[in-house]
Image 1: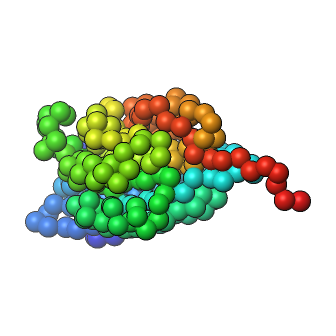
Image 2: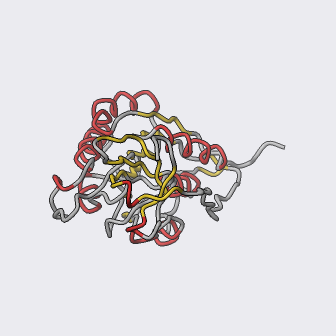
Image 3: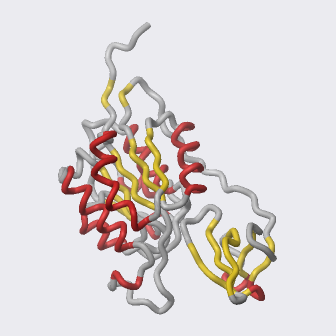
Length: 247
């Protein structure tokens, strides 16, 4: 096996497909193809995979309205490209940026000032250490970076209906992300989330009427692991009806 190969892990029932990103001292470093997870493995546990992309049945309603705009900051360029294609499919106005998770906090306010979005996505990679304490921020790969980015975003806009934030990745410290100011976050049960889960959440909010609170259960039900992977707080939609429409 070599760098760039698509593999799955036999020990975990071949549940997730990974790309081999590095090999050092017989340790294979892996990045999820569709799930926001990083891992490492011995070669003996890996098997080459015939990968095929998953499809989502999410439908975002199209009607005459001014939809919310999105600022999407991602710690993985491959995932960012996937997300931008999906936003385009949903006809959502988005500005996307790739940067390392630990760099997001320093760029967040300038980007918010530049784009003035209705919705903000802060994501990338995360993971909880094996046998780690789920209530200890130091047990997570990048939750600390996400938390600091959220806190700085809330210095820019503290109203949770004026700036709606989705934050987190696979196995992130859900409770702390919400406590830090996110409207939606991962992962309540420390499950993995799909690379497109942030898109599925914020696209529904971007299309929901500003007059109403969104249906949390309906939104979460469209994500990969549902309430085990993503959760949130009461949040208003941001779309504004257009009347009359041009003929």
